[in-house]
Amino acid sequence: MKTKRSNKIRVEIFSNAYFSLTVFWEKNLIVQTQLNLPCLSQTSYLEPYSKIIEQNIRIYGQKQTVYWPNPPLDLSRLSPFSQEVLQTLFKKVPFGQTITYGQLAHLVGKPKGARAIGQVMKNNPFPLIFPCHRVVKTTGVGQFSPLPQLKTILLQLEGVFKT
View 1 (cartoon, one colour):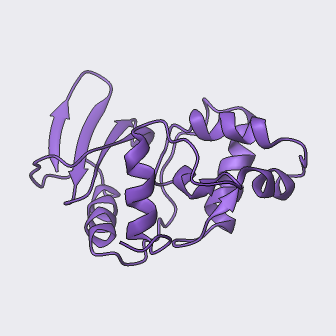
View 2: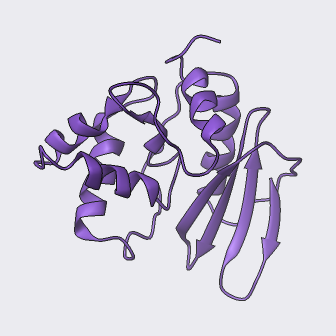
């Protein structure tokens, strides 16, 4: 994990052999995460939850089930609908499983809202923690904003697709 400090936002980068996760902290809350290709990193924790993030990134690289216990996320910038969609995804679609955009729309009570679900996934400020990579099209994998190949890599690590 590489650590950078700025005035208000603090940044940590966690990495394994398959991907890296950049975590942006403000006032002890995660305000955003970004997925990327792997990078070199060193260990140094800014927040108590950083140790959980580091462990989960390592465990992901070992193709083992990952849990995110009570992540300290700043959801204040999200609409109530986006919060509901992401919380439903977080609670109802566990590691190693997928759901279609339409199925997720049904779960949040918007049966014709698959496109709206797609927009929430596209704008998800917390990828990996809110596992938007687990939301797929009925006809295939679908899009993934950070890097299209990362969606397939994450689903392979979760055992959805065989490597």
